[in-house]
Image (tube, rainbow, N blue to C red; front, side, top):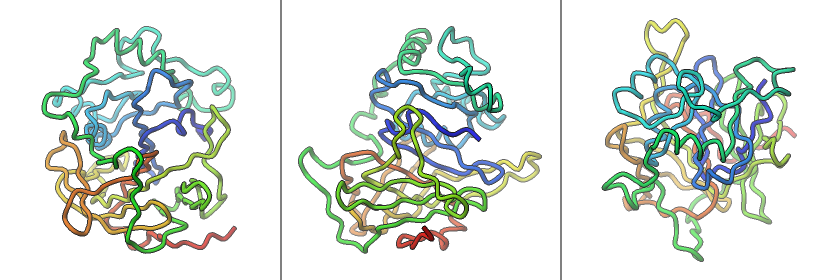
Length: 293
């Protein structure tokens, strides 16, 4: 109901993770945020997305939050911008065209310029915190170098998050990028950026398996996703994949990925997609998928 989304093609890193009801929500990480055009729609926070933002010591933009997320924001003193319950003059706006045919929750937007102004208004720091410099969660290869995996072929990837949302990524041999589709079991829709009209694509794909379960007693069926500790996953680039492991000692520390040799994983420079995928559903991930059409 919220498509098209805006600025999803400009993310340096794009996370996708389940929320309640079988939907997924996306979280984009932007380095050059000031150059962004329209960004949105902006939705409410879930507590485990804060852990993902902390992989990058990032300023966190959202529109409301679950009670669990608000508690985490307060207790961990997260520098955040809330488009619902925070005074931020001019940082957010309702898109009038979207209001004509979308529900209210799909219409809150911002821009790179407005984000810049919001940072100035809140007087948040824009330098990495002490001790964090260089630990950017992803060890990108030096400029001019290409990581060629000694792994198995992966030209089409299928990620069935739920009966509602399934993502697919098709590898293009010519440009070496993976192009994203959504609702694979139903419509096979290319995932389009509303700003450019182009299908979003990535140089790197990570699949990170995390324990995921409904929160006992939560009347909305909201989820808890365990992002701390250690786990397994896959790294995919250049038409191949390799198994990996990951480690995130605390909720506020950066995640580290390791190759089969136990050393930190070297990653190709370029746009990166990260799927936070339920551990109990990992057997349904298909790294050599044959789409119906």
